[in-house]
Amino acid sequence: MLIFCLLFSLSLSLATTENTLINQQCHHSETPLACRRCIESDPESESVSRPVDVAAILLKCLAAHSSNLAVNMTGLARLANNTEAQPIFEACSRQFDDMGQRLSTAGACLKRGDYDGANHGVARAVGSQATCLGLARGRVGEMPTQMYDMRMNDALSEAFLRIVDRL
Image (cartoon, rainbow, N blue to C red; front, side, top):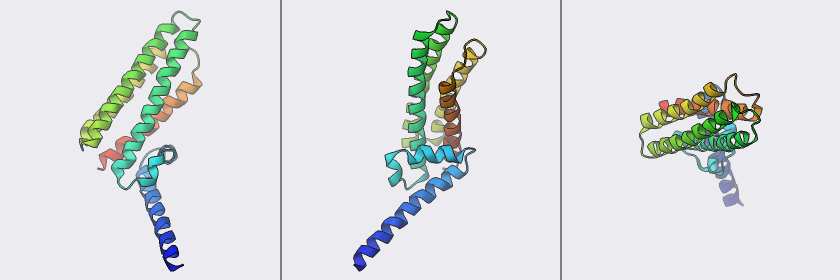
């Protein structure tokens, strides 16, 4: 019984430590709730032990959002009734594909400890999103789902940059 109690308290202690690390890292971002939700949605969050692990999970969330955006933009291009909107959506889809590639490069930099390279890669990736927004502004209708994903990308990339800046 004593061994069981010790093991149970140790597992609670580890879970609290992991949660504390996530809270500490996300606390410094402008959107700590979005940061924590991203981290906690990943099964690997249970084993994070270093700030770089938190940053790596944020990259995975960013990559998932950019992939969704690329697919959504391709779908919007196919459904576009407006001849001006179709090429804009196609260009945005390419921008989000490019964003995914840049995030992959940033992940490779993060793994090898090149934190400046990782930050640069994420900043460039978010630039791809800005290019899409510039193309679409005023020329296409509302895109609520896509705008949510873009705002989430902004929030998660900001959190990533802040965490990596402190490494």
